[in-house]
Length: 430
Image 1 (cartoon, rainbow, N blue to C red):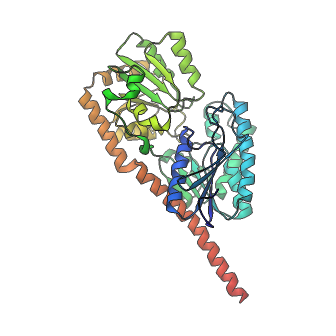
Image 2 (image 1 turned 90 degrees about the vertical axis):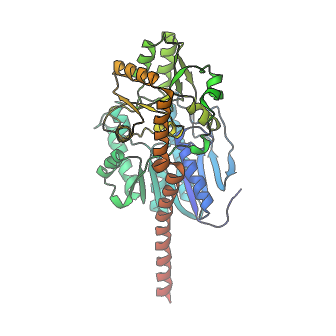
Image 3 (image 1 turned 180 degrees about the horizontal axis):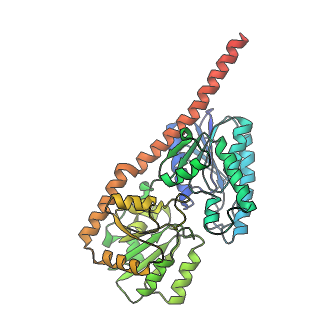
């Protein structure tokens, strides 16, 4: 099945892709569909056939969506139950992508991100063998994250190998997109020159942000939230986004029937959340899985305040993109993390929320009580400010278009160079 004729192929490698709910796959899909709409390339995506969080989910092996061909590889994801299983899924997906990158016909360029880590190895090999441009969207950085989380030592053999592989990939990229200024600084230190580097945050999925009025929201009604003040964390539960302080605050407030703490999403940190709810008997806390993309607007819109968490040593390593979904639905932010950071920059520039440090349970309690005592009109004004900031600078329509403009320029430069070389060869032969 093909959705296009004999155009150059833009190959996209991403272990997760829609309809899988993982954020990286959704963002990769936004780019793929926009590039497909532009019509300059045959857009071909290779992803895993099984769900990223739930390997019991099996997606079609081949399909075509909005002008994009999607092919899903078997034996490429086995869930995230433990690091060994996850690593094996990463390895099998990577090996298959090496062959895909080397043998895809009429290849014009490759676009990849960090799902899975080191997928850029396949792209870099193709860049060498097939002399095609490759573009890298740095959603997070490793081995930086593994080192910051204490999984490996900074001078360990694993860290040194990963660092060399990273530099191998970065050296061969034609475009590197960093999510914020802090991540860009780390990439510069790895030798990425300015002419390759673009700094651009990810965008919220506004196409799915239709929300009902607060009191008519079916998500709030379904989960018994009517009449409650809802503090929500929605997204990946990871040690890189600590939730211990928020959980401790929920325990301290367990007798407050007017408050509800919602933890929506998945990840390794989900066990800590559910264990705390169970062991402490928290009737004021609810844990839910990732919600379908079609439910995203009502899910995010069910909150009165959204929590955004960033580990103290994670600045420039990961990017707290949860803030954009909260801004898109017009909700204030409770940021738990370090300063300076990307989110603290936004809070300093705009009155859209509160900031507390990790381990500051008392400060968290005060911030939640301040938000609870803030009038609905003032909360709405904070949310409207957040939405205006997003619409002016961070909207999906703006950022996705700019992102794809950068991709097209990079790939077109290589096409122009090939055309010029071909013309010179013809001239010399004549």
